[in-house]
Length: 283
Image (cartoon, rainbow, N blue to C red):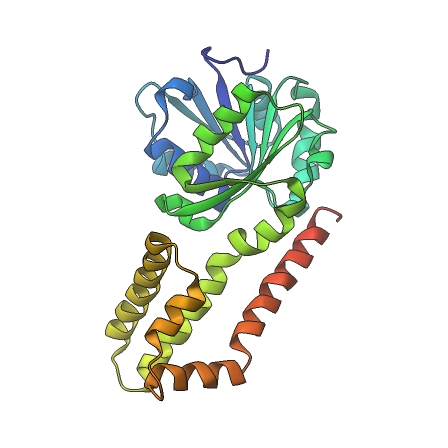
């Protein structure tokens, strides 16, 4: 019996690594009472990983929490679940799913956090599939998630998915054709931003600002600028030009960055990540 609105259900996170934990941490911090599972089972490969998870997570109000490890135990966890979140590495996904394929029922809801794997690939295990691309800031409720659902997903299941993913932060629904781009922009995006943060920080150090203060300033510059763009809704180019006074310091820096291909380098980097994402599910 699959998920039925208003009825108790069990949710299993199959592959509770970095992204699986980010999802779990965000959700357990603020579970939505109406659609919260009765039980959550976190599945990992080894006993040592299971012990670490047990130390991190505890049962929350009205939600039982269990940890499982190993193929046999994980297959049993899947069997008793109506909603299965797949958080495995792309190259391990087929192996992990094959080990519990007979325990996945046709009316189960599969929610994939796996980069590169398509809805069609997951549909060989169950027809109801939701592809979710999120990122590591989700662990702190400052994440972004892009969601694409198969046609078999019902409206009640769609709402459940939004409730489960919502605590991550910002949720956007897009067609599946955009998921590889979302993998690059959203999934890989934090690493690109951290590269920019590192660059700003080291520029400060190069000019004599102590490391601690340089890091603090760089973080606040990124945070404040992002909030300004979000709150005003103004195009980034317009906000940028507002900072640039004629013959001033900012435009001098912008010209130097552009001459070194900073903007085109970022665009090409994101596009390269998207191209790689499209290859991951084919291996």
